[in-house]
Structure formats: structure tokens, C-alpha cells
Image (cartoon, rainbow, N blue to C red; front, top):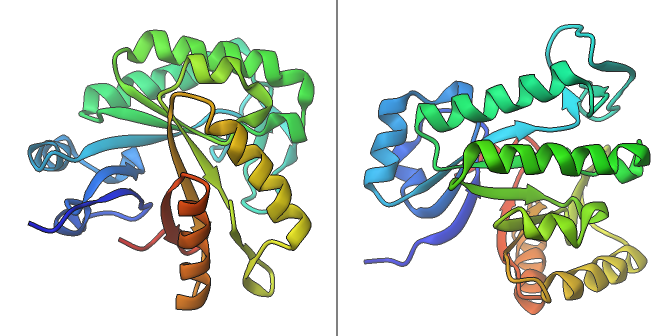
Length: 231
């Protein structure tokens, strides 16, 4: 039997046979019914439901800030707003009840936008851990919350470790950024966590570069397009 790849980030729907080729898959909860999640579990695939912790793609709500993410259009939120906390924890509980084996915690880089929210975000992650235990928690970056974050989650994804998407297409990071990312990766290796990279590429050459560099720094590699539409 062919060995399975470590992880897939897929934001479409269906494709259960293709997803069965992975140990873990990150999916959008709205796109999968409990029966589909049971099918994947029967194939020994660990399903992780997507959860945004500091941005909201929904309609106007009292927890939203005026500022929006320029790349995706979602509203930044007041992470400590009681209604937002209840909303996120409700989503987490619903995903677990639906059949997901864990959660993928996204939009954790508030130290770059609203650094005053870092302690509030840590509190929210800890609350999710309590509600979802013993579910698997995978964090996307969140480096501003280390080392405390490492005590709460089971794994960390280094999104755009080597390659990224830009307005002009897909490209490797410039050398100074690659060096900075290498320093972070070396710090992550000191943690007893599952470590992954998620890079963006549209050519075999760029894909090979990202996968080779992930191996060099002890990260399990995943490469996709901006829309995370590949399996």
C-alpha cells in the first residue's frame, strides 16, 4: 500500500477518495456532512474543521472592527468581545459534534495587526481547548503567542514558509524573509509539536523548492494554490 501524505488543506467539497490519501485533512465545516466525515474516519483520516479566530467573513456584527483584511475582505474583530467568544466556541463545539476529529485555528497573527489582542487570543485558544478536549488542535502560525501557544495546541502550520502568492503570481520569498523564516523554524523545532509547512505554488519548480526547504527544516510539507483547491 502506498504511504499516505501527511496533510492536505482543501477548502472545496467532496473528493473523499482523494482525501483518503492523507493522514490529516483540513476542511471547511459547512461543506461536509457527518456521513462524509464518518467515511473519512473509517479510512483512518483525521479531519480538522476550519475555524477563524480573529477575522469574520459573516454579516455585520457587534464584534467586528471597522478595519478589514485587504486580501480576503473579512472584518477584523475584537477578539475579547463576549459575543465573539461565544460565537467561536459555538462553532468549535458544532464542528466536533458534526464529526470532526479536531480543529484548524486560523487568523492567529494578531501581533501584526492588533498586538493588544494577543493575550485575549491566547485566552480564546485555551477556552477552545477546554471545550474541544481531547480533539486535535492545529494552529496556523501564531508565533506572537509562543511559547504559551505550544502548551495548548498539538501542532503548528508555518503558512507561506518558502513560497507565496502575490498580485503578480506565485513566487518564493526574497532571501531576507527566507532567512527570517528559517530562524523561526529552528525555534519551532525545539517544541514537541507536529510541524507543517503550507506553501503556494503553480509550477513544479516552485513546488520542489518549497518541499525541499520544508524537509531541510524538519517541516512536513503541503503545497497548494491560493484557493486551496487541490487534493
